[in-house]
Image: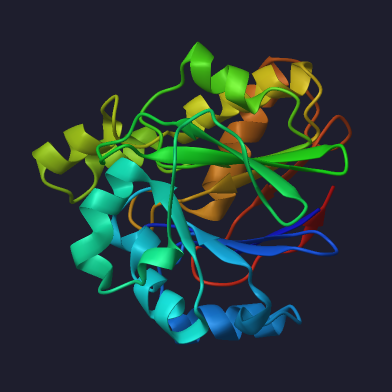
Length: 262
């Protein structure tokens, strides 16, 4: 499998996941034009995408979903709750392209097996996804208010984990956001901090995961170098070497990140 973050953050999200035979788009939180341009920059095309998978109904995850479904006749996969919440937002989608699933129940698109799992976020039945093909597993989990043992079990055996590293705790506390928004972001159904991401990555590294990508960084309350160094510091405290034991990268907010192969 190959995974490439096209965009990652509160401004919009889109992730490309593919095998030799199947190409998927996870999230469509930007315009169809921007997603098409990003795919083109890595030699891919929307016309070859098999399906779009959406984690939840917030606009930075669904902005372009309806347009892509109509223009390219693409099926959109989302939980029943997400479909209920986003249907009016994304415009008409043919019934045949409305794909609904139950959490923890695997389904297949081409040669990729997808397992959706619930995540703690202030949305209507939000999910993360694990993708399995040819004995490899990649997991995408952003928009997470807190980590639970159920989530960690869903992450198990991942070769790659794209994990939210949304904010620096002090930048959020001292920043310009109104207090209720700060509480929402830091709450149990908000977003994961850099420090919390570091703890999860250390836990997963000790259990064999070797490739990690920090995603969904806040524009106002974080920046790539800070997220990276904070996670490295946590790893160092846990005796995990970010240079030799694992591979650690950051998914960029406004442009394509490097392609990762597992």
